[in-house]
Image (tube, rainbow, N blue to C red; front, side, top):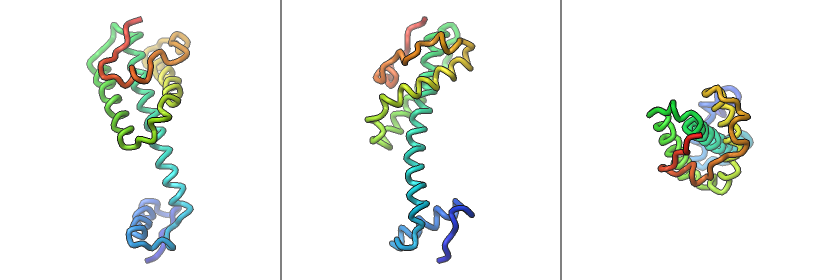
Length: 146
C-alpha cells in the first residue's frame, strides 16, 4: 500500500491511516501527524464547549437585559445550546471537571457577542458571569429582567 502524504491529501491520509490501524500495520502509520491530529480533535471538543457556552450565555444576557425583545427564537436557542452542551459532555465526560473554568472564558466571549447583537456596551454587563454553572445548564432557569 502506497503511503499518502498528510500535506498532499488530508482526507485520503486519514482513511489510509485508519485502514492501516484496522489491519494492525502499526509500523506503517504516520505516527507524528496522527498524534497531532488526535490532540487537535481533543482541543476542538474544548473549543466547541466554550463556543456553545458563549452562545448560551449571550442569549441569557439578552434575555435578562433586553426583556422587552424576548422571543421564541431566543428561547429555542437557549434550549438547543443547553442540549448540545449536555450531549458534548456525555460524549466527552473528561470535559466536565474543567467546565467551571471554561465558563469564565465563555462569558467573556458572550459579553462581546451580546454587545454586538444588543448595542448595549460590554461595560454595562456584569464583569464576571452572573450565573452559576448549575443555572446556565438548568432547563428551567431564565434570568430575571434588569
